Amino acid sequence: MTYCVGLCLNHGMVFMSDTRTNAGVDNISTFKKMSTWDIPGERSITIMSAGNLATTQAVISILEERSKEVADRDPDILSAKSMFQVATLVGRTLKEVIAANAQAGQRADSAFNATLLVGGQVGDGEMRLFLIYPEGNFIEAGADTPFFQIGETKYGRPIILRAYEPDMSFEEAIKLLLVSFDSTIKANLSVSPPLDVHVYRKDSLKTGRTFRINADDPYFQTISNGWGVALREAFTRLPDFSFDDH
Image (cartoon, rainbow, N blue to C red; front, side, top):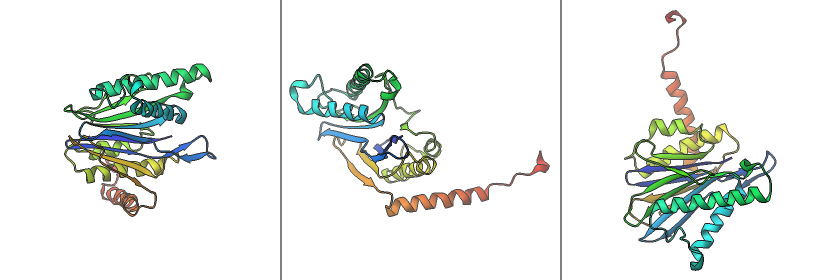
């Protein structure tokens, strides 16, 4: 399983993904699930993936190859004129890879399924974030839904919903996402550090700060331990239930 989050802020976007993949309890590996492309001053694009590893790696490899070979651009993500065109191209590529695998091998289409998050900015267009489904279609984040998750979403979602503010700083957003990831990691063994992070600043049109947070990172440990203590303290401050009132 996987957990990836793309978060839109007033002044930029924060992307975070875990790196664990597994095909059973005795077959656990670490793979990068976040990829970035940019032409400084022109565009910055980030893609995160969840689902069948062979499918997602094939999609990323095709996009990467097309971005290098001019003759294969039709267009590619580095020549598409808008983020909508980027999302359309990525969705079409994902659909083609899934269809090709399903026809060549297993008949269970779900075995090859994957979902992608695509975010970034092209030229003078707005920052945009898309959730792309295995069928190749997609939806876009907006004011009512300013973030998307893929993979194991249920454990970390309530935390983001309760604490997210569009004008929060990048540092606050990373803290919020680390709490969300910590809750997911503690509830599901299929999600695990290291965690990859990309911070994109609005209108910079280039890849921003990218870094990896390991399980033994001191700040991550502080967040993990502090969140547990804070939850217990908040619980004790809530009024006790009384049978006499019911």
